[in-house]
Length: 292
Image (cartoon, helix red, strand yellow):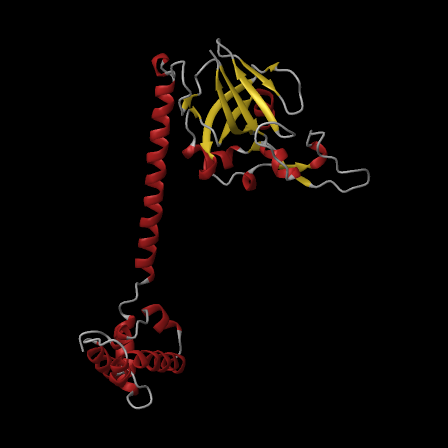
C-alpha cells in the first residue's frame, strides 16, 4: 500500500497522536463505515456510475484490515508509529512559528518604509495637491482646507453619532498660511489651535481603535451630552488619547501623511503631549472641503 492507512482515512498525525489506541480505533471504524456507504459497489450502482468507486472501496478495505486493532494490533501499532514520524518536531514547529513572525515583521517594515517615504514626499512644496476638484488622498501639508470630523470618544461613550452635524461633530480649518483653527464639539466659532501638530491618518478599516484608547472616569469626559447624574458611580469612558506604546504597536505602521475621508486623524496636542506623553485622536474625517 503506497499510502499510510491512516492517510487513506484522512486522519492527521496530530489527531492520531492525541487519541488513545481504543479511541483512535473507534474513530477509524466510524469513518470506515461512513466512507464504505459512499463507495460500496452496491451503493455506486444505484447512483450515477463512478468508475473509481470500486478502487476506492478496495483501498478502504485494505487500509482497515491493516489498522484493525482487534485482529492485527501489531500492524495497527506499526503504521501508527510510522505515521507519527511525519508529525513535525517541537523544533520544526518553533522554526515555522519564527518564520511566520519574521514574515509579519518584514511586512511591517515594508509598510513603515513606504509610509516614511510618503512623509518625505509630503514635505516637498511641489507635492502639494493643486487647487480645483477634490482629489483624494490630500497631503496633510495642504493649505486652505476644512475638515469635518466625528468625535470617536463621544460616539463610543454615548452610542450616538451623526454623519455631519450633531453632538459628535467638530471641524479643523487650515488657512492659507497653514495655521490651524478648531471648532470644537458644541461650539459656534473657530478658535486658533497653533498647539496642534497633525501627524497623519489611518483608514478606519485598518484599525480597531476604540479598544486601545485611554479610559478615564466619565467625570473627566468634558461633553454636555454625557451626564452621569448625581450619586451615580463614575464609569470608565473612552478618551480621544492613545499611549505611545499603543501608538507605536498598532497605529504607526499604518500612518500615512494624507487626509482621507473615513480615516482616523492623529495629532500631537502640545499641552497634553508634554504633560502625559499621550497622542491625540482628533476624530474620524467625514468631510473634506478644499477652499478656493
